[in-house]
Length: 215
Image (tube, rainbow, N blue to C red; front, side, top):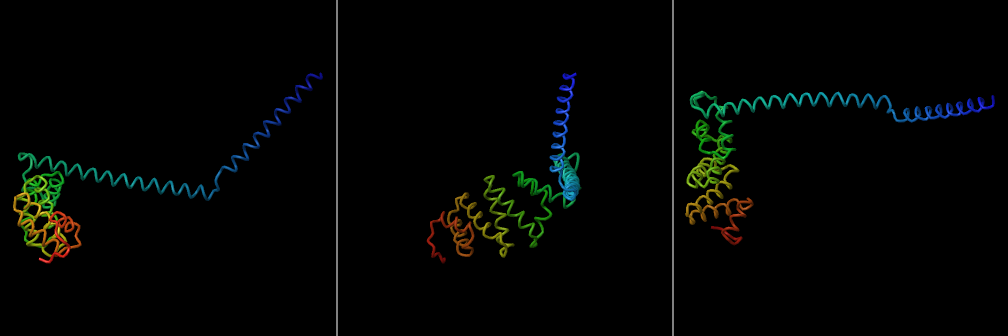
């Protein structure tokens, strides 16, 4: 009988301990659960983030479709039998021309950009394309062709921000063509008229010209 009482007391103590442990766990859980307003705020933030991710996914998908279309046009125009250059829209030609410039192929770019290059106007895009063509040919060691496009910039866009770059790189092209005197004239003009340009400072170092240049 006494043994049974001891067993019941031991069982009772274990149950008391288990109950106390459960109460402690419940208290910890209650303390760890954020307030309802915080939960609502987090939930709203989650929904907003999900919506932004969904919209971003749509934008990425649209960009991928546009890129595929452009690549398809590039592939088709490279094959005369599949699509002729004349059938491309002006926008398509410009896009393909810019892609060709980016790829380091100014010769192909000229084919696509003939329409805008032939227009004798102050179109800012045309000026940028002329500079890009000059730079592209200069990088490929075609100094004469590069000089041609830099010259157009200096004649037709003499009041634009492209002039310092055109003067410097035209001088560089002249140097490659063994026209050292023309190079000096161009760089002196750059230093005199655009002294604050980083390219003017570079030209000054290359020419070793004193600061009081006036001619």
